[in-house]
Length: 66
Image (cartoon, rainbow, N blue to C red):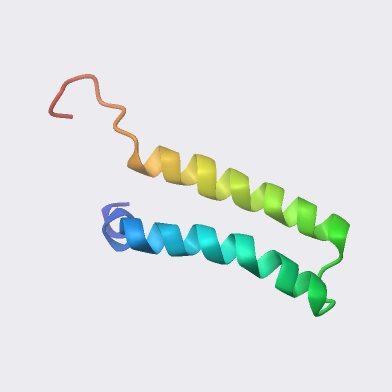
């Protein structure tokens, strides 16, 4: 897990969020996805990126040094 945390620097995380947001309309424009599928994909991505990143980068230890 620490390899993932070390690789996902703040700039890489920001690029991931931007790419996920910008790629959807492009895929719809080229006919790869339709509107309803895009909403499902964005829902999944927001769950994975939002909850997953929060879980990785939130300190859940009890002590100040945890």
